[in-house]
Length: 478
Ligand code: SF4
Image (cartoon, rainbow, N blue to C red):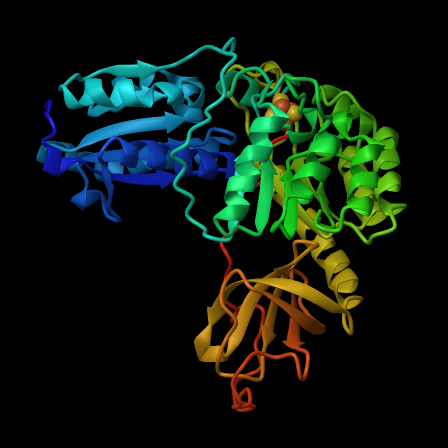
């Protein structure tokens, strides 16, 4: 059922699956759609165009998208058009039309720069539109029309794609080869964001520290420092780093530039050199630990987080044990752990997947319990510290404020005042308690916010389960 949109019907609903790269791509897609005269709506039923920006990093993520399409396909009979964007689109290509014939547009991220033309064809009633650039593209998706959803913290993509080809990963096939933006263009965007009131910038890339300035002016560490020196910017983060490209000057930059956050996310994936070899990670356990030693030797206390895959083909009990000992040795502040799932086109798909799902689940649970215990001990060491928190939200009923420290830890605190600090503001907080995944605190007496009433002592003592949940976005790859 083809539909030609009328001007008044140009409404869209966009749902994003996956990592920060996808979230930020969606911000750029939304900006482009708005610039083309579309209006964003919050319900599929109100939209003339329904877009899903998809993730294929794990089988579960991919299934979610097809389930979502299945749930909403009846809307096609009401004249709505469907578009599938992102990694599943690039991976499955025109096969999506066979599986979901009501989809009209399929586009991978490397083709988003052609969105205005694709939208024009859609509006003209075309039923099968594809934007499926192969991985040879040299272009990035830079646009003036980014519609950032958060008014104080924003993303900047500095590099797209990946040339690493880890044996389990679809990213090189869905996101294409590495291509970096010039340092000048990144800095210009950072300055525009600072002028617009943003104080926190997160530099993004599947492999962010593989960044190579096409103009040759700056290394990744120099760009990091330069963004941190943009007037008005108080916090700079970057994700995700690959250990192969992690250089000492990144630590030196963090030590030298106060606005660079005290946090490095450095995916290890396994503690076993044998498994790392099968994963084609191109480093050993010892080599990785050397990078950790650089970070631990910094003047500042830099928090460390990582990604781990359990149950990779061939992983023995002894290999898994090595991952557990590595977690204890590094003492990470957070670990994102996943069960291995075979992905199309990857070398690992042809390896015998010898680990049963039951064993993968058991190992995952053991790892999470182990890490939880490590964090319970390490987070308790923060009690008594005074830290700066960027406010992210409130739970007014409990009189609590949710924020994030420079180490990227969630901190829920009370202020002693009914007037809560606004999201995006910075507050000094004393840490008074901890859970394995978050901290508790209170603002400093005399430095609390305006307002006289005291924080009600009758409010229940929070438990971790009762605390408001911040949205957690899955880590990028690297
Ligand atoms: S895991 Fe990261 S580094 Fe490896 S191929 Fe995927 S995106 Fe590239």
